[in-house]
Image 1 (cartoon, helix red, strand yellow):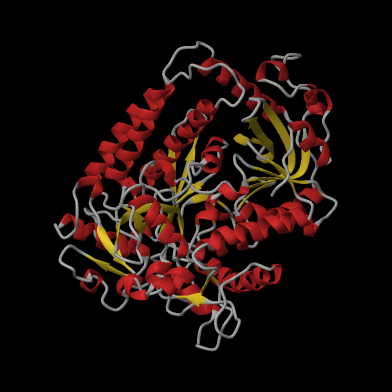
Image 2 (cartoon, one colour):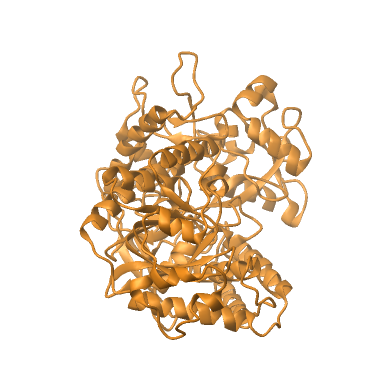
Length: 615
């Protein structure tokens, strides 16, 4: 397991300078009792490379930074233990071409990725990514990741949706969980330090350059600045904007994207949110695409294998956006089971046999028993699409660096958008995205930190004091009702799902804009009736809800402006893809007044012809 540190132990063991700020470790009031208007910048904790997030992207970034320069202090910060990251929930596999005997190639992987993303993918990025993905599989295998093996002892692989060849390497149906522990072991081996139960509140950008972050210790309530020569944001996605209809963990609240917006950075393609075809009917937890990759079939209430109606050549292994829409159409047209939010179709793997299910799909059998009280060895399971992945994220300039436009700030994994996935991510591409981009970000963050000095800390000082004041304002009155916050969160999720979910229209999106204005007003009026900073999880949830509202607004702006259908973004009032006007990335920014602005950036087109996506 990863090491646990108190704030003092973290600062000391990571070779971080302390000074006066370290004199207190208990409570917001004491932390800055000496000065209510400023912070002695010579006493602000510092480290060379600070990484936010302990999924695969964060862990690979940490190891890469340490390997690039072992003399640098590298610290990974997380709200939760690494075993609770979104990476651990990835089941099906990790794409990467390591077997060329059946005609597969890096170019084919890139082509499938570009086509699967409905040509919103930057093609130069896709080609590099496919090459790096193959190398990542070899590296993970070398690290000792216990992949499933075929009869010849080679890393086993299966089909994933939208792929022209079999290249999804897997470890049973627990690939993400096993990958996480492999990467965590490697991070510990390389001397990476971990700071658990700390929540990033904001990023400080001063004179265009990143100088550090504001952290809140969830255990003690301390709100404190940390200066860093470079920062890597590996904070994951934001699909909890749909709250109770998503397969992602409760921590997927867009903390990195929201902080980036507040810091004046670009949120790229925020409207591109993926809906996975197969979540359990009750709870939306994922039933892996591997179930279909192994031969599972989808059935409606007539007993029909209905995907033949939509994509007869690919059936259940069409890209996720197509399969998700097909399931919803079956339900809409009366060929599903159940009603309203509990409507569903069936996923049948019984014909695979118990032996194969227990060998390759044991986790989803457990999920079926847990959430639906049924054994998918014996009968089909009720499924319905669930929000799953964020193709959009913090804009980074290039896959070569994973650097944002702010020097010293990098992003990786689902938090970043270098446009590998475009408008729809292919199954199996997320884990290799995290491992590939994490390594690149960590390497370049270390290279930058080795030549950089620390910023002045002035902006960081202001942000920290602002958050301390905000905590007092929100909690100090002793009034308020946390149930109001939870009700708002539920309503936000439902409104986003109904109006900005799988099927979108102008009228729905405009109605949602009105709802968002109402939600924001209600959020601004919320108060948390607990002034005790120690383990004040209600305040944590309050901050997360604010981030989700911000991410929702950005997604809504992109979805309203993109008057076409492309990948996961499906407009029933604009059914065709419009390459003339929208072969572009949406680029959302926010000014200091909180007003959002939208610009566009051309997609990089290369050797793959932009054509109608047919399967």
